[in-house]
Amino acid sequence: MIAVSDEVREAEAVVALETTLVAHGFPAGEGVAVGLEAERCVRDAGAVPATIGVLDGAVRVGLTAEELERFDASARKAGPRDLAACVVQRAVGATTVAGTLVVCRATGIRFMGTGGLGGVHRGFPHPPDVSADLQELARTEALVVSAGMKSFLDVPATAELLESAGVPVLGFQTDELPLFYSAHGGPPVPARVESAAEAAEVARAHWQLGGAGVLLARPPDESLDGVEPLIEEALVLAGRQNVTGQAVTPFVLTFLHEASGGRTLQANRELVAANAELAAKVAVAWNR
Image 1: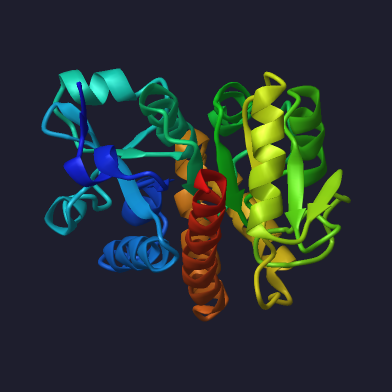
Image 2: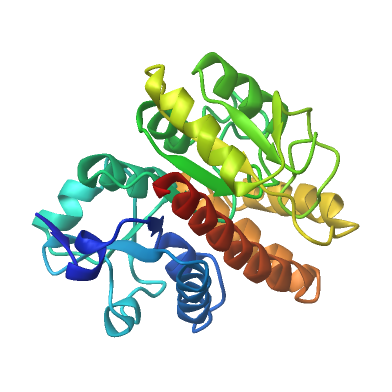
């Protein structure tokens, strides 16, 4: 059911990458380029990328460039609940953060890079929407590098839920939890680290103490102004059009990309690559 590429199987430092970003995070035709750039950043930092997705009746760990081309907007978003159905029904399944973490747990991969973590949606419990990312991070011995949480979520509530689940949230050279497009404005992080090596040591100690997931929050290099009003507008429009569940994220991202004149799109590209690179540096440091 799980097919691991020879390169990934033989590597010491491995970074998992999701495929939902490729299929649903960017305009048609652009996601593959972002995925390949993230892989390049991982390699340049000395690790091996393991891009994960479901193809031809198997969960594939370490996709080829040709296989990655098959992850377009028609692919199913594959969270933990969806993986088995995608395998049995031979669907193209683009793994979410949570779906990727399930595979990390099954294969022993300890590090992952992504854009933003899912969490508690604004207005909870109406809608009663909490991402499976949080539960899987709480149960998987893996460190995930992201630019904090997706900016259209209830970030303080998500941070509280991570605390309840015992997930360390480390700020990478920051005292604040990044808000995806912005480096500032989030709640304070419980711990700050200054280097990839320090993050690796915290993760090692956490796992030795019996802990599971670790979130390493890397702020974007440049903050975007004026995004919050666009987010609120996007969420109102999503409500009017009855966009719910897994469809909310691609809907909001598309709206933001168009309404910002492409500024959020470029920022998203850059932070995905930068997070993948940092995850690779942590993986290399941990394996030393």
